[in-house]
Amino acid sequence: MSTDPAGSSVPADPWPLPRNATVADHIVQRLACWGVRRYFGYPGDGINGMTSALQRTPERTQFIQVRHEETAGFAASAHVKYGGGPIGCVLVTSGPGAIHALNGLYDAKLDHQPVVALVGHTALTAEGGGYYQEVDLLALYKDVAAAFLAQLDHPSQVRHLVDRACRTALARRTVTALVLPLDVQDLDAMPNPPHAHGFYHTSSVPSSGPAVPPEADVRHAAEVLRGGERVAMLVGQGALGAEIEVREIAHRLGAGVATALLGFTVVDHREPWVTGAIGLLGTRPSWQLMKQCDRLLIVGSNMPYSEFYPPPGQARAVQIDHDGTQLGLRYPTEVNLTGDAAPTLRALLAALGPGPGPTRWRQSVAGTTAAWRQSQRELAEQDADPVNPQLLFASLSDRLPDDVMLAVDCGTTTAWYARHLKVRPGMLASLSGTLLSMGGAMPYALAAKFAHPDRPLVALIGDGAMQMNGVNELITVAKYWQGWRDPRFVVLVLNNRDLAFVSWEQRSSEGTPMFADSQQLPDIGYHRWAEVLGLRGELVDDPAQVPDAWDRALSADRPTVINALVDPAELMMPPHFTAEQARNTAAAMLRGDTDWAGIIRRGLPTALTTYRPRPHPANTPPLPRRSCTFGRRYEL
Picture 1 (cartoon, rainbow, N blue to C red):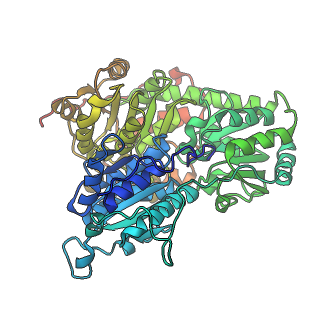
Picture 2: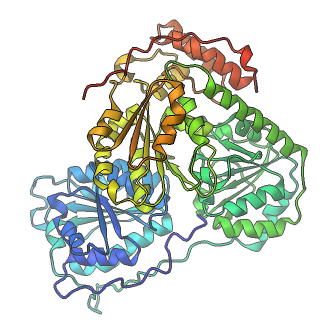
Picture 3: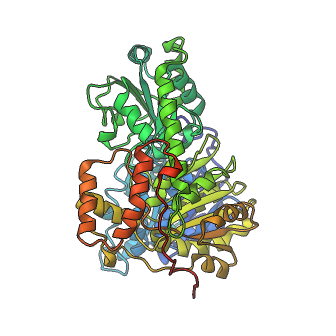
């Protein structure tokens, strides 16, 4: 990452410990040395010592009570992603609390976010006796916290275990964990262990990170890239903080730029040379960019779909990443530069010399991108039953505040976000990028809002994820929103009564029809639930309502939930639709897919618009409309 994750200005001793301090007090004070001031969690008797310590430092620390420990894990990961602090922290109780937190912690591990998990445990005196909630936490957390995992059994360990957990989390950008037996938390603190054999005196000063690769390697990379006539760039979350450098080197190379979803805000998606997202949910211009380039520069991305890179041997490639173990994993790169994105790109700019000026390649990229954007706008404006979900995203894109924060869930929501929202530097946006877990958007939204309570937020969520944890975490929103300087917290729920992404995967990859018992969801009045909690609710069941709904939500004096009744038959066409996918979808229809009529109704115009750039609307046949038989009335 181009930003300094440790923050070397963090004071070594943020406050002195009182004489009667406990081990828990010492843990809280030592974590503060590393910049940890906010804890996401849920209380329980296994962490009573820790919550008592936090209660004693209300002006220095903050405990965010969420509705479920999984949310705490996601929120700790998002806390770092949205710039809330150098390290995320989860505080959960023993047994079930520790188990619940794992999914969110794996999100942090897979997306390389530094998070420290504090996990309560059975008292030392009871361990091994089959006590209530006694789980082998060292075995349970062995994978998610593989970089560093330890149990704190003696007061003298606090200093070196906390220091090592934080230093490792930052240096390796991963999850570490400390298991805290209940009785140890309330023992007398030992802030200064003896200067004797078997004790440690460790440092809380953050380690320096990688900066710039050797000059010879940078020159080699410049030689490789300078000879290209059709240069492509792929940028990911490792380029966050290097927005200026990415733009300058793209201009210098005359490159088109595709983005991984976690690096979406690195570039301005209104620019003609920005082709947008890459991958299964990406854009056709990004697919073509990779299939036609002769040089490839990858900056801070480890996007795993190999079929979306250039074919091996087509392009000479250079990769930049702060972690040398991540280089050359996805494409046979010729030069691998281990370094921080911003200074490495600046060194590369100096080595490249003057740029080529306007090129046919960039003009071609711009033309392809403009045609795609026009086709996506036309898709969003096509008729649907009752509302086209793409219209909601296209309409939002036109209204995004400059300082907006976006939290995106996994599913069809991700596709429409990737296709329609023209984000730009200055905005913040993220999602569960590698774990791809449903239920991430609401915890992300909460973390973002606590990190920046003076900025507006929009959470984009499917009804499956909303039912998974979103309806419960709206209670958390209701609990805290009046303390936010900017009360705008907008939750869009795409209510199509279908786990649509999985339904489409079944059709296109398996050739099986939608399995109603597995896929269909109950229709819930999400907007009514918001009103019960004292928030605003909006029901959108007609496309004409979309613009005003966004305008009201983005100017509201309190959080708003938009319950949008959208067409479950809306197709997510990949940038490259294979013959096998077409055959499988047809086979699903022949086998009695319950929404075969919707597939035909939306499939033909979607395919024509997607794969024939900029068709005239008159060429698209009018779509038959069904009467809307759901969602008009709700009972709680």
